[in-house]
Amino acid sequence: MCFAVYLSLLLVFSYHQQVTSGSHVLRNQHGVGLSKNTTLPMMFQNNNDECDLVMNLSAADRCAFVKNTPDCNMEDGFINYLQVAFCLLPPNLTPLTITLCIIWLIFLFIILGLAASKFFCPNLSAISTSLHLTHNVAGVTFLALGNGAPDVFSAMAAFSHPHTAGLAVGALFGAGIFVTTVVAGSVALVKPFAVASRPFLRDVIFYMAAVFWTFLMLYRGTTTLGETLAEFHSSDSSDDEVPCLTGGTVQQEYESEYRPLLPYSESTIKILLSSLNPVDNRKWRRKSWSWRVLKVLKTPLEVLLLLCIPVVDPDKEDRNWRRPLNCLHLITAPLVCVLTFQSGIYGDYMIQGQFPLWLLIFLLGLFLSAIVFCTTTNECPPKYHPLFSLLGFVVSAVLISAAASEVVSLLHMLGVVLSLSNTVLGLTLLAWGNSIGDSFSDITIARQGYPRMAISACFGGIIFNMLFGVGLGCLLQMVQTHSYVQFEAEGLLTWILAASLGLSLVLSFVIVPLCRFHLGRAYGIFLIVFYAIFLIIALLTEFGKIHIV
Image (cartoon, rainbow, N blue to C red):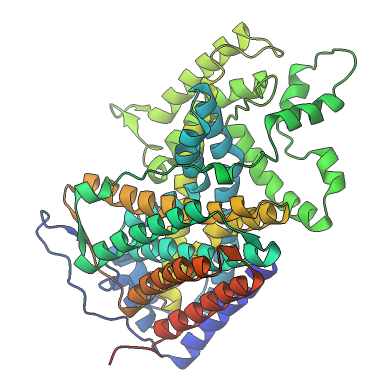
């Protein structure tokens, strides 16, 4: 929370400096404009965004400009944040509006993290268990998708609009350099260790290939359908196999310790209320006060998600079967999908212009819920209970996509108000927000004595995120526009970002073998210093201190 307060003050100060000085530096205007011919390819560029000109106007004229300019109408979100910034409150209270938007941005990141870790990943694990997939196949498919869900969905949301594609490029490259330098360096500082040579070289080589391929697409300025369907293959090494820290056996033994001696049956109301309580009293007593404060802030969001998303846990004896709550999910889950899919465009849809779609979904869900409730018991899950994991997967994916769209729209507003490019917002705020959870997880795993697992997670996740983030984003845009996709780099900053990521990987590829694959504290300090230098150069480039003569 201290970081959030500091960030809010910094952005407000930046806005105040911009307003008082009355100066506004326009971005480079070297991009090619959109053609009137609809058969020509979509140009992914931010340079011709007319909405950037709003800061050149007087404060009194900005609201009307935002309402009447097509580029300021963001369709991929529930809220038009530009109208919030310029029309909701008087112009002298714009810093307050920015501060409130920053707080809302933090909550969106929390929603992304909760939906991915508490609902999306467990349901993916349940699906892989039901399909009897091996750990290798499940790890490179379902687990990778679950861990990278916020990054992949954010990239897909950013690629959906030509003026926010720079956010996707900045976020994917920015998260890559952040994870491979700061997170990997922190792992080496916390627990110096000897990395497994073959898996490390394999991951670095694959990631360099993915970075080079993306760089090549940016350099050529175009991509085709065949390039977006590149298939990523990986294999686990026995050197990386470690015992699971939170496996089902440990959890079952822990729960059996608190199991009552005599069997008893809870009432339906009590089961419902206990199912909606995300706080574990035993864990609450063991945790620190900072964890408790964060848990209090997240509890309302967790309760809302528990009401909407079913979770199947194969490690539990009853597979997390909660009869009243699961029956309620048959009503709430489809409604949430209809009301949030593609920013709620189907919320007002009328069947044949007479019957609302959401009401039909509600009635069907009510009918199914009544059937399930009358044909099941509280104690024994039905045979079709694994199907609830598929429902939970779909609903959590829709919610993650909706939250990612809101994040992209909100960051686009901050870029317009603060005169910052989408690339710098992507490599800072979006990259940090999507990577902070994985960072703490990797460092915690290293502290527990598994640094090899942590370093493998650093590279494996970002490879998947880059390939699928760019691939799926471009593929969806091709389907929507029926044309191939062209990229337009946002000036020098994009090339600095790509070159820095490539340089960090090349240095790791050279230095680690020279150190006999031992990652010590000196190497960790080097990586963190490298990221600090890169960030300084990127910010100096953004503010025009470094430029091409």
